Image (cartoon, rainbow, N blue to C red; front, side, top):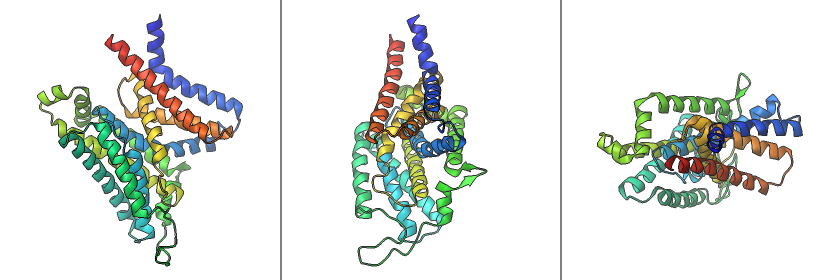
Length: 328
């Protein structure tokens, strides 16, 4: 009986929690379950979801990328500076940060695959290095339109309307970041589920030695996973800049815990038992609903960190209880 209850809670627990949160906040505040508020929630989780997809890729190959939050911060500052300081065209403002995210992933992969530093330690080191780099690059200041420069002049450029549309515009009433998020979730789901490359990622993460004996180049697969993690973090940073209209110091720091929690909640969605992008999306939805509902209740901001921590502990508990039961 107990096993059936645990199996049911493992498969449907996250979905039921989402439904319960929806019902509770709808009763407490009639404005919660409105179209405008729900689209706001989806828009708020779009960046978290993109960053969490990157974390999911690293988890699939049995790794863990702690540098995604710092990568978002770095990309945010670089993206804003390319328009405000250097007045580069839009295509370069998007491509250069994406390349920067891929470079971070390459360095992570080099440290993990070639130097053989454990994933957690390598990406933790990169977290601090990137955090220092983005503050050094911006000299500790936010980057915004017509900002004063150290030499007494004014920055010549501004964030263009075309760029801001990426984070603030709408397509048929749906916010552009939500459209980008849904396309990313669908594309990655198809890639992981229905392509050989996606299955190779899972095989590598499941048993590296077996994957190696099967002729899979484990190091290249792990490298690809970390590069994808960096690229999705960079995409999140670009969206963040377009959404707030400036480059903000440490913008990505809160996103690390949210994205990790979303990815781990995803383990238990519909009993997947492994990192998967649909589960990650539902994990982000759960976090977004909680934060939005708590905001409507006017709870103090520090309560949000408690909630994020509780969600992460809840997700880890469900996941590891199930893993322990399978081993027994």
